[in-house]
Every structure is written in C-alpha cells, then in structure tokens.
Amino acid sequence: MGRRRSSKKSFGCGRWLQKWLCGCRYRQKKYFLSPRGRVTQQNEKDVTIAAFFPPQIIFHDVSEDREYSEEEDSGVGHSEEHQTLSSRAAKLHFDVRQDYKNPQFLRPAGNVDVELTDENANIYSIRFPAAGWYLWSATGLGFVVRAAATVRIAFGSWSQHLALDLQHHEQWLVAGPLFDITAEPEEAVYEIHLPHFISLQAGEVDISWFLVAHFKDEGMVLEHPARVEPFYAVLENPSFSLMGILLRIASGTRLSIPITSNTLMYYHSHPEDIKFHLYLVPSNALITKAVDDEESRFCGVRLQTSPPMEPLNFGAYYIVSNSAHLEIIPTELKLSYRSPGEIQPFSKFYAGQMKEPIQVEITDKRHGTLVWKTVVKPVDIQLGAASAPPASSGAAFVKENLRQLQARLGDLKGVLDDLQDSEVLTENEKELVEQAKTRQSKNEALLSMVEKKGDPALEVLFESISKRDPYLVSYLRQHTL
Image 1: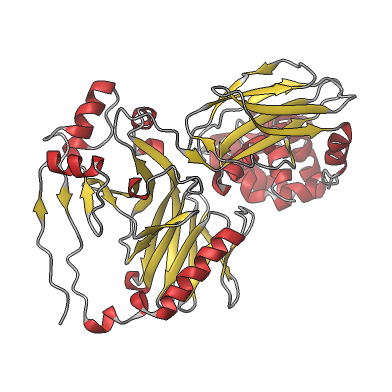
Image 2: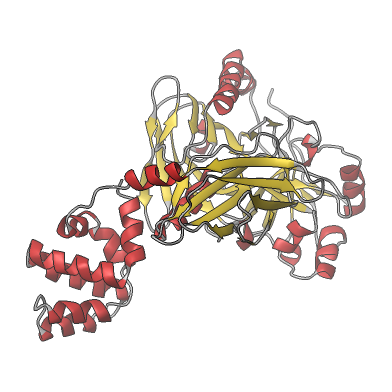
C-alpha cells in the first residue's frame, strides 16, 4: 500500500510563529510567502509587518502530494547502499578543499567533466553517467543520483531576491550561494547537497534554523532540509528551482553566528609604491573566484595565506593593522555575505618599495582578540613578479582571445584612429566599423578586418588595445595562464 496522501491546509501565523520560536521543526513541510507578502520590502516598518502579521504574509503547508509505493520505500532512498553513499559523500565534503579552478565533478569511479554551455548566462551542464554521488569542488555542490541524469546549473544573486535589510535585522541570514538547478529526469536525483559556511563545531547554531529557500512565481518557498552536515545541507527527493540555504533567526534576538571565513590578500606592483588589498569573506569558492577575477583586471597578484583558524562571527567588525604603522583604509572590515557578482569590501595600504617584512593582523573589534596574522616579505613580492607569464606576441594574444575581445572591447574611437594612422585601416574600412549598429558587431567587424591583414596588422591592433585599455589586456593574460 502506498503512503497516504496529505491534504493541503493553511494554518494561522500565530501558531506557526509560536512553534517556530519554541524550536519545533516542521519536517517534510514547505512554507511560501504569497506575492502580496514577498520579502522585498525596503523599510524597517514593512519588514516587521511582512515577517509577522497576516495577511501580508501567508504560510501554507504545501507538502508534496506524492504517493510512494512499497517498492520505492525499499529502494535507494532507504537502502544500506544509499546510507553508505551518503556517508562517503559527507567524508568527501570534509576531505576535499573547495577549488574553483576544478572543472570536474568528483566521484570514486572517475571524475565527470563540467561543460560551460552558455558563457553569457554562465550556465553549466553535467551528465552523470550512473547512480552514485558526485561533488563539484569548484562550488561545494553535491548530488546523489539513483540513475544516469543530466543536470544544469546556473548561479543567482541573493540581493535580487531577498532584501538586504532583512539580513541586517537578523531575521534572514544568507548561509551559502544561490543555485538555479534543473535535472532530466528529475526523479533520478535523490539528494542535493547545498553548501553552507555556517560553523557547527561549537554547537552554537540550532539545526532547526536552517531552511532551503526556493524562489518561484508564487514567492519564496521555505523548506526544511532532511539533514544538515558540517559543510552542506541535504534536500531529499528535491524539487528544482533557484535555491540556497538561509538561517531563520527570530527578530530581536542577538546571536553571534559563527561561520568559516577566508582572508584574501593581493599586491599591486609599482616601481615606487606597492599596494596591498586585504579581503575578509565567508569561505566559499565562488566568492574567491569573483575576487580573483576582479583583482586580476587591475594586475593584482594573490599571496598565499592561510585562513583564520577559528570560526568568526557573521556581521561582526574586525580591525586590520600592520607592524609598519602604514595607513590602512578602511581599518575596519565587517564580515558579511555578498553574492559573487557584487563588489566585495576590502582594506588597502601602501608599503613604498618595501625593504622590510610587514606583519599584517586582524583582531576582533569587540573582544580585542587576534584572529589572523601573516608576514609578507620582500622576497614574496619578488617571487610573484618572477612567476608572471612570459610575454607572447601581440598577434598570438589577439588570436587566442578573439572571442573575449569581441565581447569586451569598449569604445573603439581611439583604436580606430591608431589603426588608420598606422595605415592598417583605410578611411572606408574605419567608417564601415563605425556604421555597425551594436558595440559587439563593431568589435566583430574590426577584428575580422584586421585578422585578414595578417600578423603585422594584429601586432598594431594589440599595441593600440594595450595603450587604450591596459586593464583588459591584463585581465585576459591572467585568464590564459
């Protein structure tokens, strides 16, 4: 006999809130915010209303009305084999360091390549060839599948779906990245492991605070995960949508939420003055990649440093200092989450020609305790400069980065003038480029014309782009290492 179908019902906000604050968990239930009460209000008064009072917010029990046969009950979802898979997956998450440069899903039987199917929309596709568990160390995202399946993954921004003032008022706390996931066939996926950076080791976080947020047409749908592990939360028999992990904390409470964090330190070389940038961010490979990409645009080189050894408190302020008493702007950093596509805050300072080692420290503003330190020596900067890629010919650079240049070249007026002055382009050819309707079509027309004229013409084009847009050239060089 299959499981009994549950009937849909709504229930009062007061009873839900009372049970929530008492720490009760509603396993296998989902709650959604109706369109009238979507959590997008922008002032404090509206936030309070949206969070606690009907009819602005309506909670519904929308548990899946699926029937499960006895055969399914005894299948992979409840078998010893699946329990073994889940335990192995947990160990893999623990053992494998997140590495955004890894283009594969890991699994015991052999890794599976991740294909970038839409570069503009940043959509990835993976074909899981057989039942088993898979981990993408580039994101911390994992899957347990019953059978072969194709999964597509894109990335979202929390700030576009969840008002920042709700996070600041400690009602919703973003605990990991936002993923847009689809699968074919959907029933082949038994578990999704959504990464989070909340530290569970100190026992300060109640597991019942964890929620999976689904963003759908009807609003934000909330679902309790089946279980929470140290680095991820598990959805069983998932529905597919834009989703990520939130912590729900009662309004008015003052809790310190410990998270795993990372320090990213970069230097920018100059003959007379070396500049440093220091970031303090939640531990997440996607954020690290976004910061690396942004810094590389301006020729920043990351130094190898270790992360803080102990969990730090989300929303707390930390003081940056150095042994050389160099001016630091700003001296305070707030540990908060910003989606990878947003600008991450950092402290910067200048060290002149740097003749002596510099010790950099981060201390907790409230308690005055040291949470991180590193020492940068002049030899670290010298080694970084020596490891810079050797210069290649301008023509080879343009050919190698043709697609990127088509998409990223900006105002062409100066470049066209340079090419005409160098007699690479005629007046008519210059006008043909200028008459193209869109920026990208202008770029494509220019690159096509110059490429047909051979390597000497490409060298002139490269020299012009290097002079007019040096940051673009530096960015592309960093990404072709």
